[in-house]
Length: 370
Image 1 (tube, helix red, strand yellow):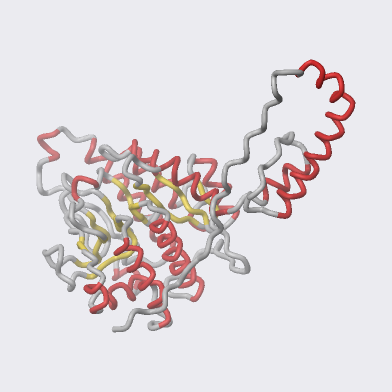
Image 2: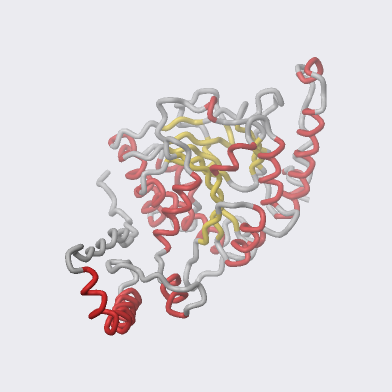
């Protein structure tokens, strides 16, 4: 098919470094001091006012920013003008691994309240095998102000992704217009992260991390994605992908694919990003750009749709195939209890294949059909 129009989010470039001051010549320095004292202070005030005015008129920093006191009103205004793009650059740089990989999740206030999904998500890293250090590379993307304020209470890398005129704060029921808008906003943000040169693991917050997933990723995959149903072959397009967990390397192929994926929402109105992915993975254009897709086995990356049966292998478990926040939280808490019970067992009992999850319960299809 013809190459679709590329969706581009234009961001201002980072500001260049300021011009260094010229030093006074050593010869005659003492004489200059006498004559300059009377004018130095007024000139400094005028210079500061001029630079401050330029800074306010030019928010992208083409002029050097003045050094102002923390309680200076001009300084507060200058801080407000610092672009969201630069803020994102800073948080990604701080959280990234040596190979420029970050772990990302998204959050709105419905999932952010104490004891809710985000607390369980962070707790799973702390309880997992070889996962606690990965919190140093996790960036939580907040969709609303309340979610951001809660994020900074529990985690050190948070980013506020505001959308003017759109309220993402309430629980978004599956396939409602608010849910779809939030999913596509998320996808476009992930494209931007790739364009900035960062690879990422994206994880929904209703996924519990029990083991470090990196040993189970494929070295030759551009985009590696979890499944609702895995047919047994990592390259088989019949695998039913789940967009809630994926590992994506930043390169020309993935950037092009994410642009194609995002633009494809117009071809499939009313569908969310996961359904659109499962449609466009067959498109000849994906093969033309050379994208290498790998599907992750549910033996390691499971969920309520198709659980990871062996607790000795499981890396992540997703509360997918589940509608409703209360049902998710109920079953996620039971899952965490099952995991802690497993960890408390001696090695000889851990090797038994009879160990299994007690979930799904409230998330089971039978309970949802009642």
